[in-house]
Image 1 (spheres, rainbow, N blue to C red):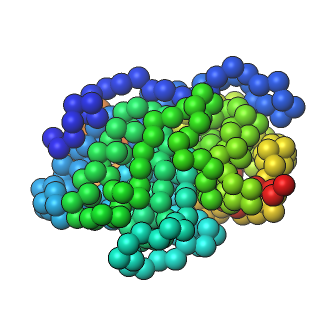
Image 2 (cartoon, rainbow, N blue to C red):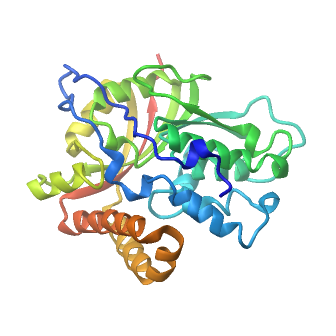
Length: 323
């Protein structure tokens, strides 16, 4: 394996939740249990990287090569590109020397940092700080980024994509305040919404922008919905549209754009499940039977949730109010 022992060994999941809030729209105290999420299991990305390195030398690997197995959201790179457009980032070749006016982007809950590395590679006038609370995922993401250092050179991806293992409820993010916050399918794991939005608002400059993709309760959730969300999806709390918007407003976010994505996400999760099952032999060879079964459980659970119609998906664009 190419990953160091600290990345590949099993480690207990850490979460971004703590004591219950007393704010009006606070969620009940709960913790997201990541242990049942096959997509987060140690070894999945290691297996895929080792598979990649059968056909490509380490020095030839690009951010795009690692994107598919290090990105854990829907619609491939569309969210990243939509965020870049909203942030006013310009694509193109890096300038000979880094610009003194780089856009500072916080990738909150960056996971394996697939979006962050590609954003840094394809939008060279930004620098991205990846924040991840789960130590084993942070370690893997940092290692993947370091793999690009030789190829990207000074001021390249490895210099403009940095990593911090931080619980934002306990520790300030180094480098704050930022111009932009990017977070895709992360907030759903964190029940203390009022406290979370306050922390993210504090990390933004006045007038700074935030791009979020997340779940919400489109209709009242059934007990089956709640059990599946809390289990394989590690989502212990889900607000309604009105509850969601109220906590954003309380944290000082304005000009909120709420774009419902459910109709586009359902075909994606349907295709993902079918493609995963069609590649059963390959998955068993690369990941083994146990991890393949865990991944199938996760993908099928998400498919069931969206098919029943109570779970909704949303793309949110907003900005922090200026004083």
